[in-house]
Length: 368
Ligand code: PEP
Ligand code: MN
Image (cartoon, rainbow, N blue to C red; front, side, top):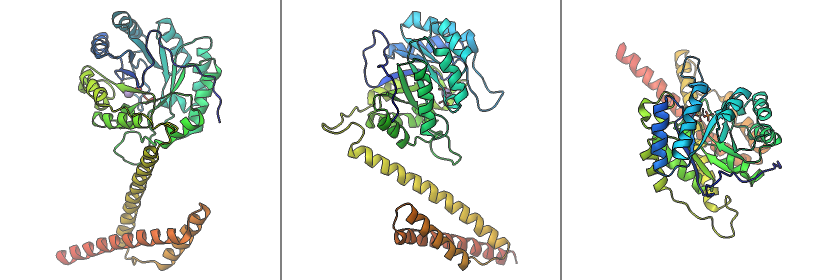
């Protein structure tokens, strides 16, 4: 169990309400784009505005944010709309600049929270400051690293702390840009129940079409807030164009959210619904893994066909069955159950490899 010294997030004058909605563009691009987006968001009732000023881009040469010249634009947003404003910080310099320009909240990005040196630098710069700080999960699915980042910021005296769940990168292709792995924020909640969790459907989904469903899922899991990238002209955005909503689109998503009340007597995030969601998620992962395994099997089939090797290699088969049964036992699973599953998987691999061989043979006959 991690013990954090926390206080509720407090934006003065703003009623605590679930979900806390934070919206704004991935990046502040121009003064006009920042202000125009902010005005539209304020008009639909958004109270906390986000905009990236320094952008941690995967490859050099992409738009890396406008830098400090964008901070006065955020000040104008505050003055004109009364919204609270927040930026991502990754270095001590970012923290000092943000404070100098009256920024109200900050978040630590996913690439930064994966690096304890960087988090410590940000934490040291935050000493003596009392504003809300949000810590995104690290890009890799490592709950302890995420908690470590939260602890570093908390140890610096930041008590208004929240976690942002933005999904985890995976090598495998999936419908998500960053796999949600809901079980990780659920476990974070179990370990630190008083820590608010904000979901970032934009970076999880990577496409605006997925945002509504991810928001609903977050609400069904009883998470506390949503941070949603919103741009007055998303298609023309300089970063993350595919995942940003228009303010009008955001309004639709928020209006359609169903806020279910946890059942009386249930611990909020331990309902049957939640357990079923975990099962759905795990089944989906199993299917992803099976599909990936079958792809490798096909590659083996092609190799065997090109090198004239028989499909069934019985020594290899025996070895697989023995090894998998043993591994199943070690995990507390029934060996016979595992054997049945692997027999069936193996059967499917063999039939897929036979199909490859037959096709190659037919092609050869046709060519002959
Ligand atoms: C962002 O919020 O625009 C951002 C860069 O997010 P992440 O750190 O989650 O990739
Ligand atoms: Mn972004």
